[in-house]
Length: 339
Image (cartoon, rainbow, N blue to C red; front, side):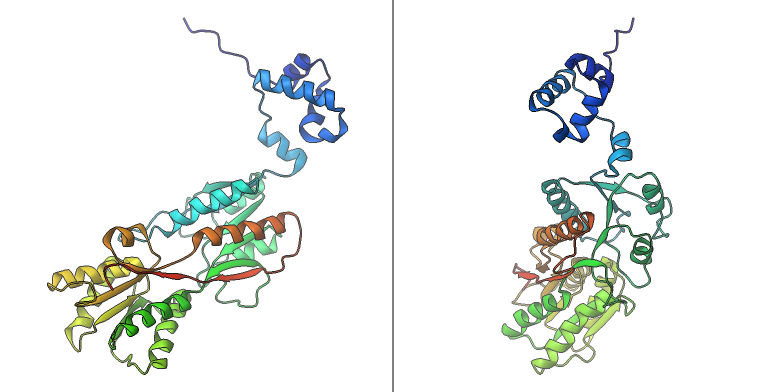
């Protein structure tokens, strides 16, 4: 025989326990300044004794606030090793918590549709704002949210609209690659190769510009020392082999840790060693994979990115203007065994 299920506390049972009206309990939850201190204390004690939890959806209808920030999470791509989103998510959750907000992750039924999932959350009043992490060429999320006057902040600058009005936070990838080139050139390397993404990636091209410009600043050649492709270890491996065939470089700077892992595999295939005594390799992102394998890598300050994203979100939710709506943060180089 099943045991009797404990009753769920309601507004009415709290009112009866405290000896007040249901309206008084509602005021205690939503407008406590309307109550006398002793009445508010009595209601709070009743809430604590009964374990009453206000219905979130019902409170949202009254206050038009859920304290939830939506972030779409797409599946990880096989053959990559970044883990960048994991670090950012952890930092974002912590920063939101300090601001009295919570992160609501949602997925898309159609991962190829960049807007899938947003409209449903807005219609249900489930979130107050969004964090957007996809700022690649042609992504319509920012325009769609802007048109509906939905508060949001993007991690990553809008490459196609440098003068856009919406708030964003980014890391200076170009400066990070300059750090990598300087580090290698200061150690005597002259043939420093670049392994990057396709030209269609404006983020990748921004990082590549750091390699091109710094190599030229230091009087170093770049001819036949670069390769472009997808963000996979397989591409990095193939590019590494191709560049090592003729007039081999003595060092590699890679657009991501994923690509760098492929270059490391190419060196192993050839019986070469990744390190200052043979061929140096530098990645980008300072992923867990980089830390485990001893890969020198450019680290993005994701903790500070999250702090700035939440600061800008808070301004938008409070309908305040931001002194700095566009923030670019400096990366740093983490030196390890591969350079």
